[in-house]
Length: 143
Image (cartoon, rainbow, N blue to C red; front, side, top):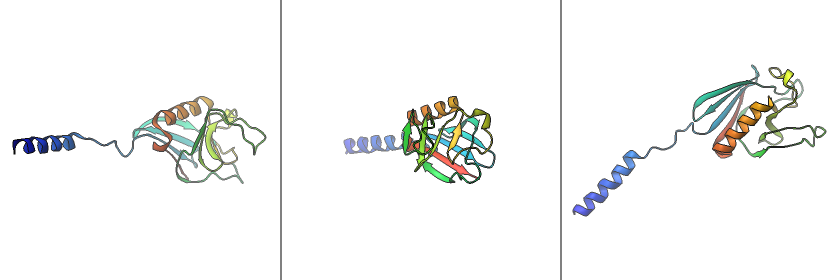
């Protein structure tokens, strides 16, 4: 009987000390299309705020919440003449968050629908998603 009591006590102690990962674990990149800003959260804590460029007139950027589907350090667009898209995080079909050489346009709509970032910010975001895993990272786009 004592053995059973110790076993039950041990199991209960294990359950009581177990702490699951918070629901906000991982990386969340929240893009406010109306303000052309991205806020990055890591494990629920705000870490960065960066200017972005989303889709210009005639080229909408989708809204919604997505996981990262594909990641490429170096990617070149087949649709737009081989345009460089460094540190690409694809979240819906051909839509991605990626670095741009058009940094002077950040803060206003200028893309064909992707979310453009300063190259160093795109690299930082890519590294965060890689470290935490694409499956626990979200791209959230709102207007």
